[in-house]
Image 1 (cartoon, helix red, strand yellow):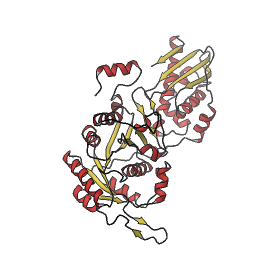
Image 2 (image 1 turned 180 degrees about the vertical axis):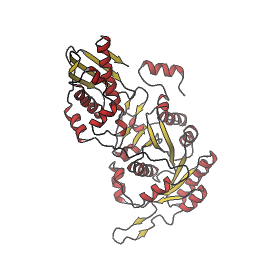
Image 3 (image 1 turned 90 degrees about the vertical axis):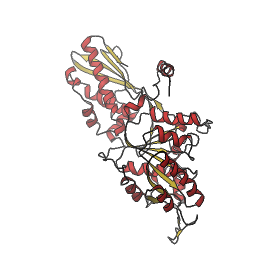
Image 4 (image 1 turned 60 degrees about the horizontal axis):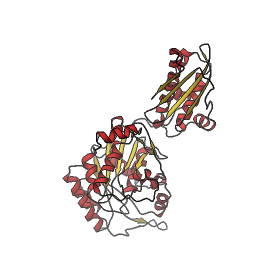
Length: 406
């Protein structure tokens, strides 16, 4: 846990104190993906399940708790660096909208090893939980490293884990080690959602016949020991391996995935009421604004200036030139993402030729409507833009010419 001195030092450097983001996050279910045995495909199962949930309209995140051997970013084709904000680190987002945070996204070099002892690994996991702006999530999946030591124990004792998905393979040795993980979960009283057997069989593409390369599986035994259902038995597929190596786990399609998702959602305490599906793409109108950056820039000797830095860490400035009480010209700049650029561009277009009182009535909802929607995780960019415009209007009212909101 950070000391007061640690937090003051971070504040002096403009960094958030440890755990600051927790109060901003609203996560319905935390699910750990565990095995105890390395090489069984925990990260693969995590990626499949996260993608399936996201495709069905759920808001999903992955916390890669394998601090010394992270593989989630590679599976999703993501690379750092991540972006720090005022209240927490911003996770990267995959093509299907899965929010992802991993130690590998924080390293200067992806090949750089993390040579830490157990206590530091445990602290890193709690920081990835408390210092990351996960926002509103239906499910946060935690990809655990092998073993039954510091990392899994920290996760189950420090995070509000609602359940565990246990991953195994057909070999007897694997099932033996996985049963150790099962007994660990039971010892710390964390419920097991179900068991997934990976590499269960190989389907010959010529004949369609199943071949049990590793022999008959022991998944039923593991499920029985877990007092949990067998969620799925996933096949060996060279094409799946190629997609994962290429960072395209979201393109994997297996016949078993729908049943896996259904079994997961119907497991005790796992279902959450799905929110209406949200778009993860920009409209054509927004894309054009991002590309051409209409109204980008500053004005020489503007009549009003508003400057705001949002909770996400992005900042915006809007300059206004007036004729009487009418906005004749509006310009904006931002250090934010494409969504922030689209919002600034559209808002300055909307504000031009309006009176000050009319411009003051523009809302974030109106702005999003004009943009024909926005990915859910970027809707806050509209709030930032509207706040910046209103601060510029306030500067006209009080005669200061400039308002800066930290």
